[in-house]
Image 1: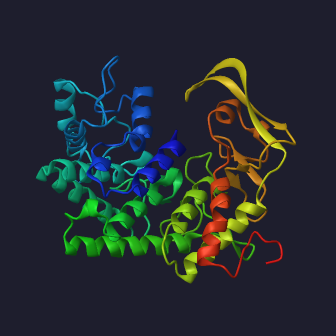
Image 2: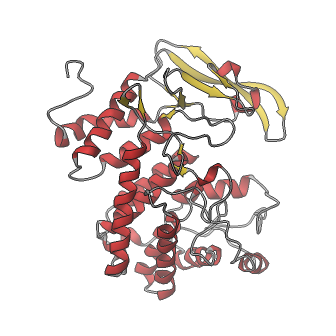
Length: 390
């Protein structure tokens, strides 16, 4: 779900907005991860929980969706995660959300924040209602306030005293932010309402964000590789996230970062070098003859989730290349981990609940490798890292 949401968000951002009909709706796909969590998990800490059988607004119900986004926007300009901006809320639900304006559990996780800003900009262009413009500006100011001096962004702001204070690439967090700022910096017409002073701040934040991405690319065994899901906000080193998410080279998040860097026109040599190194890493870290199979299993109830399936790794000579989510620093061995933070080296060694409940393998680098030839011919014609003779 998260990868689909990130891909949909990228597609939304890359679409041309020259024709009015192209902004006559708000695409629900970038909000899908938040909505999925709200409907799938009744969290006692939520302001409100989903009610059964309630309708949702259509993408063309721009005012209603934008008004929901205004309702959920906190006093600091940010948003909490895991609510559905397309939900038709009861008056009681609206009143309850409004009571929590000053509870600042605002985050960039699950596509939160920058997605709402984009939707508000669409609403303003479609309706010319000033309240949507003002809310979008507050959202952008929140994004700017959350940025570290080194250019990175945490998962939550205000900061929380846990792993979420690290620079967060997990699930496309920082990637989504810099993508959003890039469209403002590129003077996309959707953001014509932004004044020169704010645009200058956004351009500076965007440039610092790119610099942070480049500085956090992991040098391992003397060579540039890719990135970790999260990096220490002070040292920039790969860092632990949740107990089963160790410091490592993470191909899923790295793929999104590389695709973003490849979207930059006239990249400087540092960006070119970063892309070339990551592409080489993806090529060298391929796993062949391997397929991950989901099989039925006895129901397993834990404190975390209910599992009714299991996953096994099978040998298949016809399988396309695949990558593990984590590669060990230093050895570059495929890496797995349990909730007790014990590192293991095969999926079979992961406890059932995590084995079946986490995406340990990914095909994300495949898209980078598919697009590399076109990018390389345009921006780095002298060196093709996939050419064994280079």
